[in-house]
Length: 234
Image: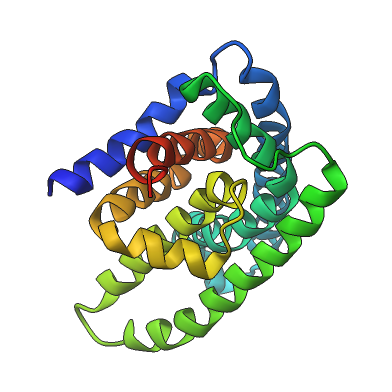
């Protein structure tokens, strides 16, 4: 339980880190990416749902009171699982720079042995990493979705979501040091509750309207703080 709370605290710490001088400018692009994508899907979805509701006639109109709450639930789910992946894929190169800036701030020295000086190199690295994460996600998400049909096992999906978000954001500081996705999983598993605590914070904030706009840069900063304090000596 101590590690779980500690991990959650590292995510919260990201809020204060992204506003520090020297870090703010690296958080701007990930923030804008999140705002644009999240706003686009919500506006488009609301318009589509409104057109659908207005097209209902006769006794179908009584469904209107049910459809809007359902739309909100579906939107949250879609945003969480789909657009979070897309936003992170687009923002991955810039998130690498943000993680490096945060690490530089925390250590007061070079953030990475190799550095991140070329945006093209970051894009290639991001595409490889995101592809590996997506395959990992699909291979486990499908059987977990089937298990969700069993009452009481829905918690497994929640835990998996927290784990995936932690892997997503921890990849940026660890990737700056040459870790592969497989290496990252092996290392993070050694303190699984700490990592799940961090991922739970990211998951919770992603589901809160408007707060989810700033989750990506905050999570990258928090993940870097977790890496520096808990794992970098490894």
